[in-house]
Amino acid sequence: MKLILSIAAGVVIVALGVILTITMKNDAAALDTANGTITDFSNRLDSAQIRIAERENSILTLSNSLADVTAATLTLSNALTTAQSTNAAQADLIADLNKQLADAAAEKQTLDKNITDLTKQMAQIIQQRDLSQTNLANANAQLVQAGKDYALLEHRFREDVAARVIVERRFNNYLEVQAQEKKLYKNNQPWITAQSIYAGLNVEVNSNGTVRVLSPD
Image (cartoon, rainbow, N blue to C red; front, side, top):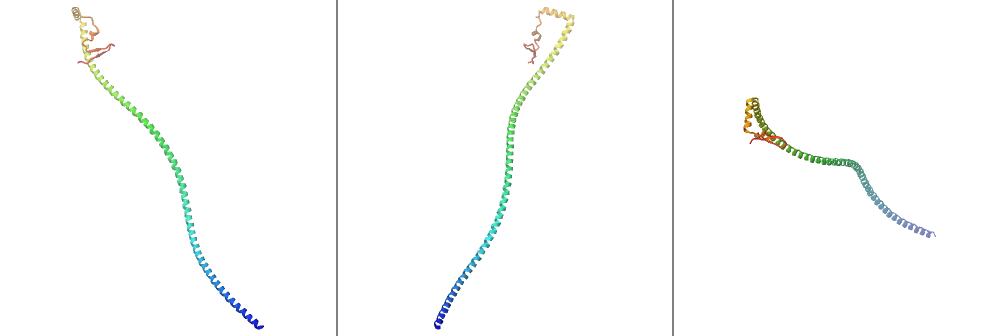
């Protein structure tokens, strides 16, 4: 009985040893697998940390870029605001310039009309000047003719004055009056008329009674 128990105990011990050996091999294999897994996870963790660092750098770069973009956007917004203000000011300036242009066009039309009127007036003035020059030339010719007529009339007047003095002297002399009376009776002269008065004086008598002295031929 003791032998059987010893054999059974030996079998159990051997079985336990085999089981322990197998278990230890399995644990070693599992440990190796676990170590490999841990190493792989560690490598992955390092790679992930590197990627995270790269991502952080990228995020930092993106953050800086975003800040730059924000600043640029703000600058563009300010520039847009300034441009809008400038555009509004330029719009007002353009409106003012258009108004000035319209006023200038109206003034030009007025000036053109004034120039046309002045041109017509100038043409009329030139026509009147030419007419005045013609009238002046005619008046000058008439004045020259009047001067000639005046000289002729003065000469005739002097002759008439001399003749009148002679006649007065004759009529103041009784013997001369008698002699003239005898001469008139003897020659049987006609009565004195207007034609006989102006005969030989080289004058022109109009129908209205005016007398114009003609220039001698």
